[in-house]
Image (tube, rainbow, N blue to C red; front, side, top):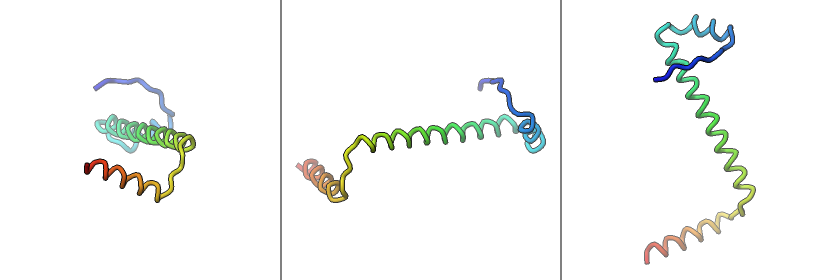
Length: 77
């Protein structure tokens, strides 16, 4: 485990110290950071998908079904 020095708002620090016992603070900060990083990764992935959708051709449901059937037929051979 690594140590990291960061600055936080005084009010946030006060709430952390008021609500979280001393030996649990690192765990709470870790969980909050992990949650925020995951949220940002998901947001970035969503943006990538949206950009790809704009550049890609749109397929109808029937076109997708036909493509899956063709792929299955090839796999059976």
